Amino acid sequence: MYIFETSWEVCNRVGGIYAVLSTRAASMQRMAKDKVIFIGPDLQAIFGAVAASTFIEENNILSGWRNAASHEGLHVRIGRWRVPGEPLAVLIDFRSLYPKKDSIYAHVWEQFGVRSHAAYGDYDESSLFGYYAGEVICSLNRFLNADEPAVAHFNEWQTSFGIFYLKEYCRRIATLFTTHATCIGRSIAGNGKPLYDYFHHYDGNQMAEELNMVSKHSAEREAAHNADCFTTVSDITARECEQLLDKKPDIVTPNGFEPDFVPKGTDFTRKRNTARKALRHVAEEVCGYSLPEDTLFVCISGRFEWKNKGIDAFLHSIQRLSDMQPKRTIVAFMMIPGWQSGPKFALGKDDHWTTHRLCNYTADPVIRMFQQLGLWNIPSSRVKVVYVPSYLNGDDGIFNLSYYDILIGMDATIFPSYYEPWGYTPLESAAFRVPTITTNLSGFGQWVESHKGADADIEHGVEVVPRTDSNWNDMIQHIASALYRFAQMNDNEIKKARKGAADTAEKAEWKHFFKYYEQAYQIALNKSNTPKS
Image (cartoon, rainbow, N blue to C red; front, side, top):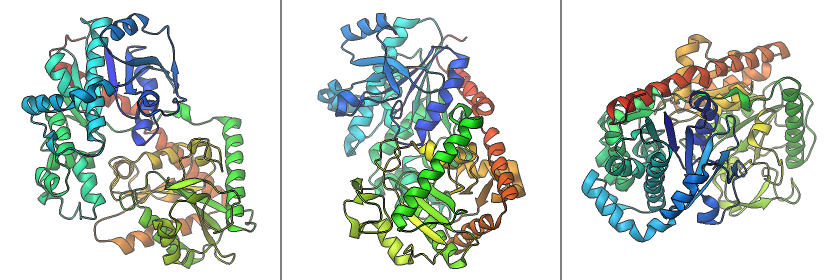
């Protein structure tokens, strides 16, 4: 069986889906060695971006198809994705479709009811990327072996047009569509509306009109209804799909993690020591004074989604913790990419909060919240805050370490999410033996609760905090109290918590979760016209 999987995050680390795909690749290769082909955007050709360091072009791979694709007018680069499993990857340049955009939209509207007339923003590049991926998959499948079963897997609404292409022109290829978060659910939450208290009263189509999300919602909804198999990543998002997309997923495919990303033995110790040395150095330079030897380092990371990712809750919790004056000094790092113009030439100069030069310092919401909450980083305070508004890709100008190479040095992490269909960041923390705090509004948090029950606390590695639309103060106090307890723990207790985090992460490895994808592939094959394996 061939598996073609399409996503904007193939060889392009811009979000959690990168972790889903890059860590799942090894399991896929074990199942179907080199019959797994990832399709992603050729950012170098399209946007002039620096070539992805994780993509290595190789001229000897699929060389016959390379020539055939060129004759068909398809613009592709072929190589391998340098992640565990090293799967084949095809990066595509879809710009040739722009002159045909209107006719494609009209045709897909007629055939599938996708309402592209209200499109704006990133809709064009996303839709054309998906459509072109469909063309590439169809061409690849003809070249490889048209008689062998094949599944084309599309991730998120941004790739949905690939499903429409294959449904019309290559029906023998089974289609699988995964929504990692619905457009409307994320938008409701991001616009400050109460998603959960009012959940069963929301109508997806109505909210799409209200939130100006008609085209994206329409593409996502029709992809969910037309794919041979529709999946999502957690039970909480499955309920969301049923309510807002009028489609219950055929199966839930939870996100796992590949242990190959975590260093072992002396390498783990070496990398942790390196990270802690860097964290201490940056914190002391930013604050302008030395820190106690037993200082704890904690952090939040992820996209700049103020409410959805719980950035607001994180900052209020840190302020509440500061008022409690914990036993040990705690430095809370905010590793959230922001609008910045590069690293500061002298840390601690101009302010005692940031590592990079903010483009609009006085209006920056993080800086304003620091000021509002009185988080001034004065020497007498047991809690300090450091804002790192940069992608941690190893070239940020301050740490010059990758996110994982910094994460390994943390003592704890906090992810008080409001809208989080799965939640890779707390799972990644646990995998790196870093105790973590999440909420029961994340798919991962709900999964932890179902497995750990009363032991879902920081003493056992993962604390799951109850969060609703109406328990803000209780939630903030819960997080602050968990961190306060953590600061009271002795070395043996922390060692136990670190082991508990790792044990939880082990239960979420792909070796346990990949079976759900195997079931999804079979569901798609059974429903399609594809010959069965």
